[in-house]
Length: 342
Length: 284
Image (cartoon, rainbow over all chains, first blue to last red; front, side, top):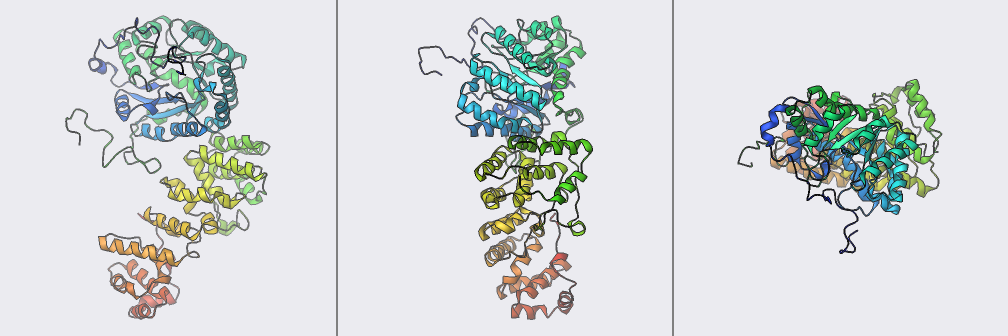
């Protein structure tokens, strides 16, 4: 990509949007700190967030805002990987270091495993990845095959999407579908019809990154409809409130997809606060920000709600492979309001 | 598939429920790739209950491999080792590649199972780089799986690698008496390194695990005289006993005459009441 600089990039990045000039962020007009008390005591589950590209500050804020568990789908790291080893290390980090880091903030970390659609276009490497993918898909705490699906909607993307649907069926794991940024409506329909063609039960499939244009068809066909609250490119949370008002809470879930782009790991609690402010019933909010994600991914047999519903105290002395996130006597929860950084 | 010891299969099956056993039996019909997947997927089909096996009363699980023991393992670990024995051993290149792939993609519990399996896998010398790597590891459970109660290091490690293993066990504050073959592979180089370590600790006024003296004892000479005197006059009975054992095993005339000044200790050693097994304790 980008070999001919006169042409527009074939793969605009996550936060590039053709129509970004017309869209305005809508949630910066209100100050989050004024609304935090609305969600006091609530519990959230973010079923799509790429913590590998986030900082410990994010973990701290997430824990404080009530996020008790997350799912990290395997995805694109912002640049193409050049060899199988990079995939192995990345997948290992999802079940290893990242899970440990998260636990240090009292957040239960699950993940989904998959070959992302962009990198499916490198056939030689994709074949190698498919050989080792089962060795990761069956690991403990892996709650699905994801995120998989289409980006450019090429034949190679389709080939590896189909192969991974078969893996999901064999491994009895839910599927998490990434729907494309461009030509989304057709890409979403195509993803669903291929999943049905492979005999997948739609109640085992979460279709992600929905918008007002795709939601009805996804729900009508029996799939889970996930919405990503991601500034500029995906859903805004005011729009999300309208979707919930219109479609209710059944099979709808919200996530942040926060990653290396301009995104917000607090997308769920912020949306919940907005919903409360707009008078959406608490039970509806609980379903779309917590329970539905658990119900969908617990089909993997890998989610035990006791791991995050009972009072969980992180062990600040715990280590992963002998390593700690803490440096020289640090405590995991420093006083953020203090000017002194000790 | 290599010859799988009947005792091992029988013991494994005794530990399982009917559904678990059916799953295990199904795996034996699978090809290598599916077996490798089963190795990873085992916790999805089996409980993690702890198994206990007393080889003294029941005999060895693996004939001709006395040090191989599974007591205290969980069922998943035992199953994983057993599954690895079902991989096709020929051709060698393919077998080695399969094991290497499992190492490359393993999470912590899988690594523990892989290192536990090393003494029973075909082509044991192929795994030496992995095994010595595990000794360098900071992962506690991984380190334990190669260093403690595993016959592989005694059988295949070079002296240099063996000594590193023992030293690392001491530095990690783990019980050296759980290293299989410890007494058989005592050596002069190791004794020198440990002797230096003892000096350092004394200089820094720090405590040291008393058990390590057993590795020095056969090689010690009168240069350790002052330290042994201070231990023999210690308020702690265990320190007096350690010093007495060191003097006794040194076969050094000066140290033996030093020991003779403590006749009760000397007598209990000669009577077989005092030996290193009395000093074996798990570090705090």
